[in-house]
Image (cartoon, rainbow, N blue to C red; front, side):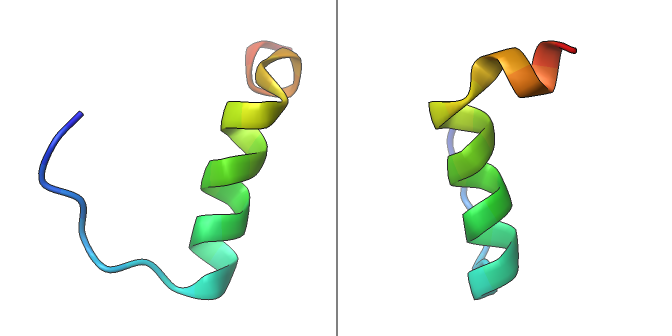
Amino acid sequence: MSGFAPLTDEERAVYEWQIWVPEFGEA
């Protein structure tokens, strides 16, 4: 993935959560 847009703290938190907890995103 390239061309990241500026994220708010909340958006970044959700993004990182999806990376570190992939099971959640696949549920």
